[in-house]
Amino acid sequence: MKLYFSKRKLENLYLKEKLSTVQIAKRLGCGKSTVWVKLKQFGIKTRNRSETSKMIKHPTKFKISKKELIKKYHKEKLSHYQIAKDIECTKPRIHIKKGYIDKRGVITN
Image (tube, rainbow, N blue to C red; front, side, top):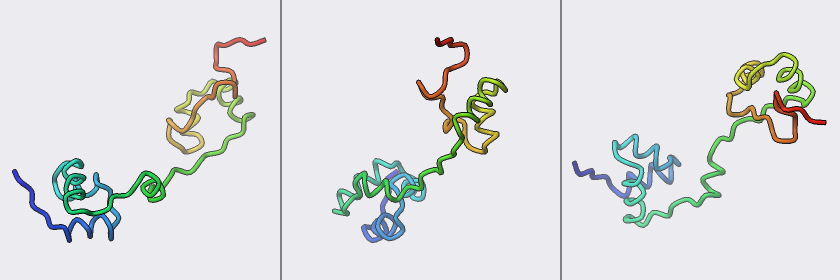
């Protein structure tokens, strides 16, 4: 199936609405690479990484003190998932950094 969309429509979505190639692809029912190729074919200036990064909403950093993290991780034996849930953030945001606190089961002198 061949898709047809105008330069004006693509300029509106990409430049005015500031949608990403992924968002445009979903809206038009095609792949993001198709959108990328059309942007190039129409001579529409694409955003660089810096411009794209400024448009992305970055997640809020959750602060937990080292003392509180040690308490939850070592004394209460909570998992990363449980700590994340407790401070209302997602699991990937909780990391036990090397050298920040000892991992459970690791004995250091």
